[in-house]
Length: 266
Image (tube, rainbow, N blue to C red; front, side, top):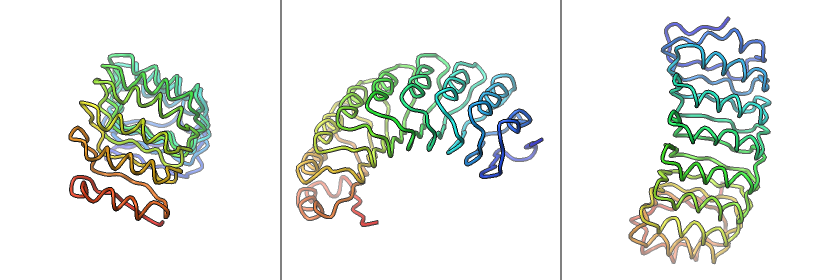
């Protein structure tokens, strides 16, 4: 049995735990953070964990389940937690799991309830495509959503996915502040969609990661011009490409003091 009597966090990373251990996890009422990453919990383990979270008086705010062998079934179990009056969950990391589009759709269904409390969601390398963007966009548009940080790094979203995602980001109900789209197979076309978000009123977006996408000079020029718009509140922009550094610096000089651009070779 695993207990937490004197600490507000539980970190059991890479401890060779499995689905059976989840059933014997004693979540103390004062537990705020639980990290079970790199354990083969699988869907059965997450289902057992969610049963505990739904039945016990727990004030858990942060849950990390990175690379735990999960599929879309775990998303359905986690969605039930969001629908519980006992839920205080604000931070959820499901990176490096085979969730796919159907899993994200199940997860986002919880945003339509009054009990949705999630503010930070990491779905990095979850084998998502453009089809998951519609569910995410609907979450942004919900009056009940409090989502402020979204990490979609390493998913095959492409320009068509970003176009759909941006329809939600431009919605007045959207409170997104940080968006990570590194390694998402984007081109300069996505820059146009994102600029429309940055220049919309109101735009709450403050941090944007577009690293390791083939944006080309034209895309970066579009972004740079968008930064000069008075409605743009972006303060951090990440991207990487040796071919665009010189032209980007030229176009970004006029807005340098407003927006910090991180150009890194590694």
